[in-house]
Image (tube, rainbow over all chains, first blue to last red; front, side, top):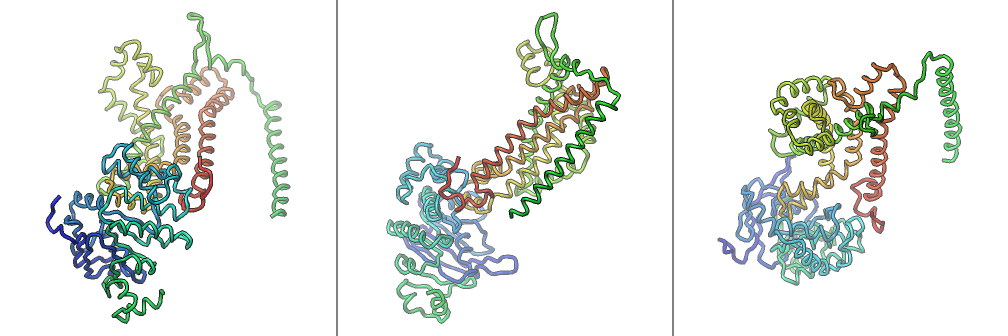
Length: 250
Length: 310
């Protein structure tokens, strides 16, 4: 698989514009590039367009203008491109969105069988491996409703990893969790980052951003206000707006 | 809390007493004043008849009618489900063309009296479409095994065309209700489910087949089962087009024997025989679903935590 533009930059998003009826400018000429293996944390006040950006990256939302290239493949009107990109990009949602009618093992195995065409046995084998990785091998037969929020989110991560994605998107993955469960999910994410996964993480967990990320990006009203290495971003922010934001949440 | 219970208890007792008075009064009118000769003894022979020629017991008018009603309901229900599913998918789909077609179908069928639909479609189907298939002729020419199977599962070889028309008409108008039930089910599935499935790379038909429809069906199963009970009852409408189902047989029997009350009480009991088990099943289904989903179907997040699931 040798595609044009498939260098070190795995995500190239250029000049994205997305408006919602209102009209709200969720993305306003937004550009960002993510390197292979990089962990990019996006922070910003609610309604700043962070989630919209993530959802545009795998085609859950369509941009009004601008281009997105993921691993050399343009995300455009071509349905085949869209499907291929979705296979390569895993996503973890704030509200878990596990399939409630399937047990944990089936949740993790479904896409492997339908999209990757794996046999039931092979999908099961890989699913169990992933569940062991997120520490939930003993819950394979449970239904989502029987699990705690933290456990559900770990299953959701395993489900996304089952597609062997090259990029993982985390859309406020810990925001809906009780405080005592945030740690277990962040641990899984940290491990994933150490294993070299390319990650784009929208989060309010500044400790995680400082410790795990390679770069922090602060956005507001659909624009990049400031970005930089985590130590520099948190210790010596350049912009007054960033300082005000950090004062508010830290 | 306790006080309201007490008041409602005395109210209940008063109501029950009133009801008992009413029942007593009706019983009194029937036994003393109703000028009616009861002949309950004649009813059983219309259910089962002893065939002197073969020396066996065979089903007579009423039981044959019950079987026809059962066959009508099963085939009508299956066809209505297929039609309803197709139309519900069209109604919730992306294509404006199909959405409009499905909407028109539902609008048309739900705003006409069933009887009118039956007449319109039956005469069209029975006169224009189905005769061209020459099913009756083919059925008569078929081997004895096939004929036996046909009369067991569908209808006597001579009346297959009429039966088929009735099934289609029934399915057509029940299908409109099932369309709306399934549409509600599909729309009750959260957006996040679509998004999670799409994000995994599933195609639209895979999302429907593996994620959305299983949840939608589970959500509306009790309603759907209730609609099937309605279908069993509504199947009596096709008696107007001389399908020999239970109601038709009842009216024929009444005309020839004048056992008005006995016949209709028996027919009512026979309908109950079909619908009552269905109702019990629906109640059990509802209880089971409520337990599984913590009552609401959407609160699967933490409500059921640690609870035993069937």
